[in-house]
Length: 260
Ligand SMILES: [Cu+2]
Image (cartoon, rainbow, N blue to C red; front, side, top):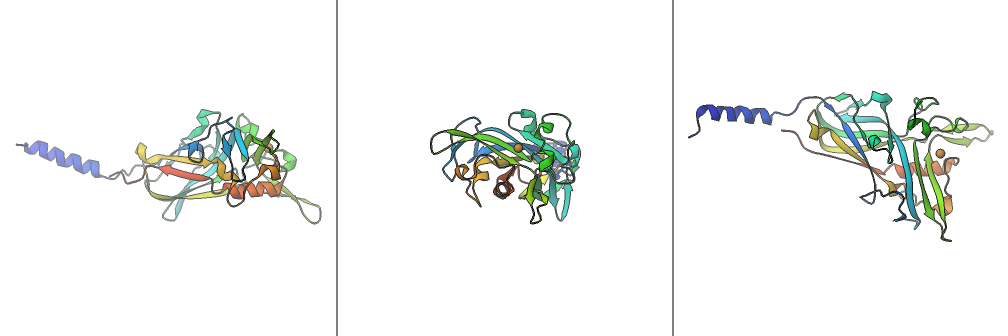
């Protein structure tokens, strides 16, 4: 027979463990880069885009900023470290970000972020140390920093390997009067969250943000390096096309459910 005291402890324990975790949560974001759902293998000429270009990626570096969590019409933007995080597939420490900012506990509806850096922050001198500093964008082209550098090679129809530099940043256009005008090419990605409870419990504050690399080369436009050539940073129309293609390159995974 179970003694009444043990029975009572059992009830208290059940009650405590059923209580929702209402402690604020600090989120951790893990950055993943994939090609068709498999981890990106760099320096490997094993990928083919929709246009039929065989390609490899040698370097991939990008900025994520204005990371914002949305809950019932209210939003919370990560502001620590100026709200900007640098990702570089060659630097393991950049592949996760645990900003020191607490979010109220609860079920969040969506997460959004900027690929790149917005015009209020993207100014020369923002970063003084490498590796972020090395993302600088030439002043005469608008200044600030590259949003992304994806460097690699593709195989041309004649069988040679040519370098490509998918570099995104501020663009330049000349208006009808001959004046140069700068264009902000950064874009916001919003991803819905379903049953995403964020709280102090470790399990419920880790988000895996995946960039599907091949997505930059398809939908809405089929990217063909044999047509575009390898360099885009001096061509606003190509950067614009890349930015439009990149908008659906991201997805998010997390542990769903309520910690009850
Ligand atoms: Cu560049």
